[in-house]
Image (cartoon, rainbow over all chains, first blue to last red; front, side):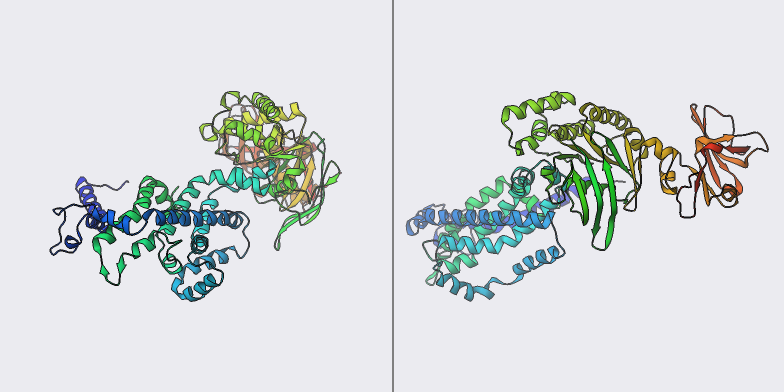
Length: 276
Length: 334
């Protein structure tokens, strides 16, 4: 028998869900509000919620003081580039683990995931020295490389779970039809895995866009993405809350808009292929 | 041409032997069915011929050439899968054309061949649909279309009808047989359904535990089973087996008699028993008779026989249709 859900229960849980959602959304809302306040109002006590002097001067100052579009372009190139490179490596890797597994495939998968459990700061010094010696510091190529390597385990895992859902018969049919492995990947597997590829790509874009540890430590100006742009507003002379908020709002706007339009794909991605 | 010969083919997965020493000669243009219980290795044997699995030992010859090191696509065979394995993102046209596209045929020729294959299979109105918009039978036809369009040396069918409902299965069975006769292409067909095997095959291969038990025409298998396994597997309802004293009288360890070769005799004639279940189908009557030391015996009578559960009967086996088997289960021939 189906469980009975009373209308009161529905009401209570709906309210609870909205409250919880609002709680999660609050910091972002507060940030956006703060970005429209003057520096003085930004930390006034008691805090002002909506009744303050609305101003866009922070945005003007931010664009004046540092070039938003330069950093935004870097973010796009680094996040996009690392995602693309990761997919190019991960598709064949996940293919071989999903369709031609060996005794050690499980171990390899777990080992790859285990690299994500190490705190990145643990390898900061060696990585920094390697980057210095290879002239990769403050270069887009270097950041693409490090972010791609950092996210590769997750990308391979996600694609692996998606590929596992594809019936082996279909790939064998392609093989009988005369497709080489490359053609099998291009004409059969990839088109069938498009929903999975899309959500993997989106999640990876977001992870790379938001990544702050490596981008802050390995870039200063030339290749600096938006994370560095935000950080530059917390200076030793003190915090400029309103300007910092304006910078942050500008930095996260593109990814929030992207996320908004691709919610469904994202939910699929985050459930790691568990929901069909 | 499509002659397939297996010479000492073996396959093992680690220490497990799936196929032990298979030798077989499939003539060009014939319809050969691999039949056996699940896990007997029939699908593995088909996949070995297809090239989807590598042999552990032995040779597979197609038209005289050993193909064990040839990749599946280069063997000139096409396969119809149990799950149909259609490409879900392609239209029916795309599915049928895929193999030709991979072979690099010019577009107009592909178009012409796809149209012809679709016409043969009554798929023309559906060419631009996606597989998800088709019924089970139509999907099955697309899978067959994909196989015939490449004009292969042989078709390999892996239980292609087992996902269809009973009525459609009978219809598709006829269509597949008719199509194969019309094209004259060699076909190897795997099934666990012995009725399918008997009705479709020119020759049947009975497999059990990785070994070929018998290879012959359906009637040879029915009339002269090589051993107890084949005798029990081919024919429906199953052959009755009686061992012990009665078998000894016939100079065998076990004697077998098919339900249709057991007659209801006069009182005092043959083997006595009591009807435990009687099934009246109108066209046939099936009796399940508890015959004491002879065990449970099944009787098939063509027509209506007015017997009920609890009635005593005397059963007379047709002496000319008695199968004798030795201790090892092999058939004893006069």
